[in-house]
Length: 191
Image (cartoon, rainbow, N blue to C red; front, side, top):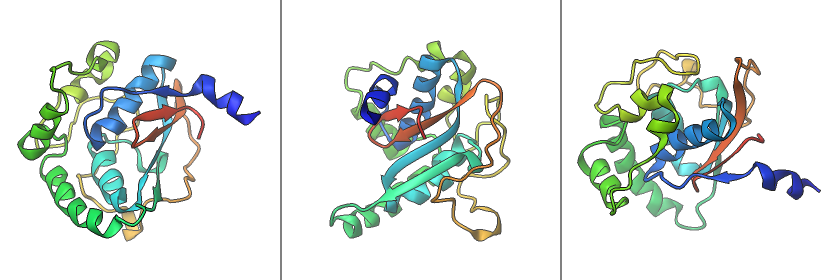
């Protein structure tokens, strides 16, 4: 059945220490396993985190808006309290898009107590400059997906929110596949 077709294509990503790394490392893990970058990225997470993923993380990675889908779920009764703390986390990522310093950097260091780091700079050399990038300015180097010119925190053109339906333009570049990234650190190639 359908479950039999998913299991061989499901994989884990074990090194992410925050939400930005969940997305970025899902891309790099997908590339490790397939030799391609995803054409489309679907993130499943709490609805109150939508703006952080769509407007901050996706923009920091310069992943094309029309190839990025966020599917929001409820937070099982804690959404109001969680949404309040989300405002602070969003402000931190807005000031530090790559989570390298301040409170975000401190949390990352605490979440890697043995200083293991991540292997993706070695296994994804074309993404190594992005993986190493820190600072408030957006990474401006080459990436294996189309470059999108925007600033972190920009709203979609026309003021509309990013797609909830997942409909993109369907244009795939050579060497790209589809992938899903979940906030639980898993990525798959079925959309």
